[in-house]
Image (tube, rainbow, N blue to C red; front, side, top):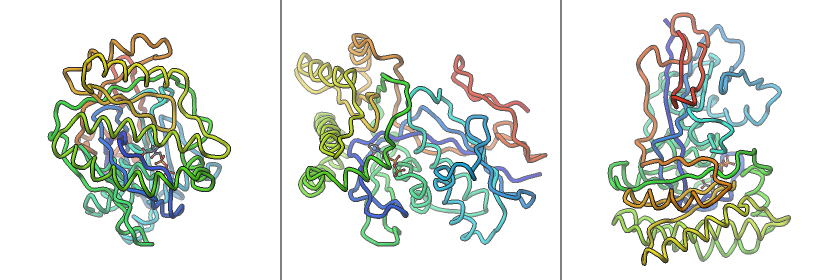
Length: 364
Ligand code: 2P0
């Protein structure tokens, strides 16, 4: 029997955004960020370290990725080296990962994927790591993944040290703290983004003067305010900061040279409709936020989800809507039939995502 560890993790959507690194190799950010880990859009990852493997192997959504021809994927898997060193093993790993949502839907999967990998690979190597250590491992693959190793509301503390040992996430509140919280995500464009976040933020740091103002004057104020809003479940303040934060991020993107525009006309139509909705309600009931793409993520409370959905119906470009709650963070699947790798043979099992049933199917 081979030792296989299988973990499911989910994305997080930031309300105080990460955009800029002070160290590109260790992925150390210029500012702390805050997000909510959601309960939907799961990525399932199975890991096996095995002496018979000649090199690391990575399967994504049913296809083997040639790591020699894909330096970006190889770079994102560098946490494997750290795990091997710490566990004092030299075996290569077979990693099989699948997204439990359509890849073409425009939802980012690097945060959930690299968080699932940190939890599954460290355990498969025999390590028992705490969430802080897992967050540091996940961070090496993708900054935002450092926040997905925990559930509920999470802060990635930027840290000060050059070795990154204090740059990790902490949980501000677990997923049961604010049970009425919802995230309504609207897919407005299923296309692949033109400029990666990694390249975009590098360009911003190098060229935007507005970015300095964001870093020095805006963020030091909003991080503690957002912590307080979450602790007190103060939706109006939470929503206000979330929207202003998104606007600040997209302003420094526009101030970048050459300018970066991830939002499109449909995104801006949604911004206007959310403000209209809040005005009609007489108080803030919904807050938009946008990442490195045109899809809208709208935070609201359970009693207002239908109003937000009705509002989104007016936007022609909205193709799909997904409603999420605060999620518990990564979960290990221990049923042998859930593994994407056969524990008896070590081979990759046939697996796929069934869109109709919204389910990952694994054949034995
Ligand atoms: C965030 N984003 O806080 C911000 C908002 C996009 C806009 O974290 O280079 O894919 O791998 O560390 O984690 C996207 O950045 O970038 C991101 P890398 P990552 O969610």
